[in-house]
Image 1 (tube, helix red, strand yellow):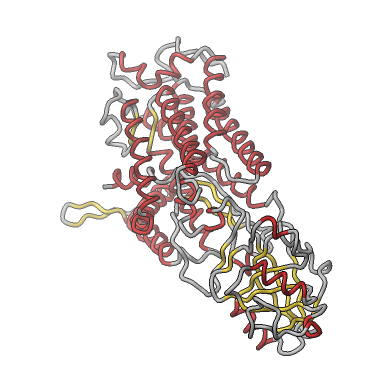
Image 2 (cartoon, rainbow, N blue to C red):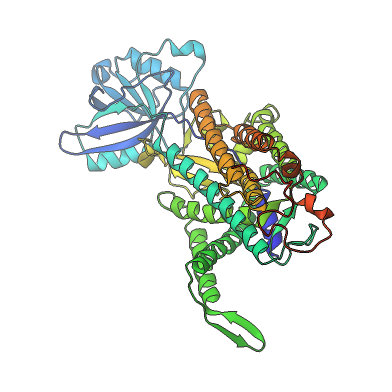
Length: 537
């Protein structure tokens, strides 16, 4: 059961990191004594706004909600001249309302809406005719302002320029490299323990069953595994609203198991003792029972509060780190050949579902992005040119919990329009992490005291992540991280093996020892055969 949960979960964790490029701004309403700020949606290519509150010009607000302003009849120019006006949404398009308000002498047009706020747009030929700012606001925000501010309302509209280099990128980078390094080190430490106990037997399908590890050693199985991933992603795209709850349940089980494994290893390392007892020939460990209760409680707590965006991301990231660490320790690639096949196929998979599938989907959004962010991530559905904000509070949409999420600290409107996150898929950690783990185990096999393969692969992963973020910032759109991580890590590992003259054994991995007739420990002093390259670190 545990293996099935891990396998199914792994099929849905390979999603690329994306960011939402919103067109949200801030509306300040005040009367000189009280003031409030509200979220508004505008089109920066139509009506640019000031970037700071001090630079914004303040105008008196005239309430014309009794009209849709689809024509100028019944509205005196003297009432609106030199002022901001607010009208109701409907009956005519945004440009028509703006042109009428402009002809009456208004300086700003606010459109109150009781439906979803979308970025106001029109035909390109109409943009040049409108010279006043236009924005949509929630009707409930205007009604609240009338109660709080009262008479004499004045407004300012401004849209601070978001920082491209957000501190959240550094946090995600730190999470990724630390997780990969710890996972690789843990895998190598487990390998060392097995060798010291003389438990390494010839490689086969069930060779690691006793240790609870799963090994990918057949190219055909790797191809089948990637094909299953493609099928799972397509199913998630078409049946998201049903499958998302199944994935959430599987995620809770997998994270509880992973967290237990991580905490148990830490307690074992620090020498925390345990008390065992038996009930009807069943042996129980008090430490294990307590840890299991804690881990299950944490997973359940996350499940109950998973939509609390303002703080639950911290717990989700902690569970994600435990999940990735346990996977890197549990899933082992038997040789470099399997690493090359798996990582290359996943590279093609990532690029195809990010860059190619938008040409086949109805809304022009990649399958990967829509599955990663959920079907309600409208900001991505139009490639960042449009946003949609609910006019009324709504139940939060469910999202796949298979990404590291860090709020964008420089997102100035996040408290008004909703929090914005930088995300990184677990797959961008696990996939290269499996290669890092293999390099760590190979260091153990050749008794490399300086861990040359492990350190080199970790450095390559760090450089690949940095390049991913650089390209993302320069292009202004999310990137399939495996496009950069896979070449960096594979090429670096191959170069190190080639320079050390160990490519033959690095390529064959554990399979090279199947020809050994002896069942003695594989590498009692780091190697059984001096021809395994020699210690050259």
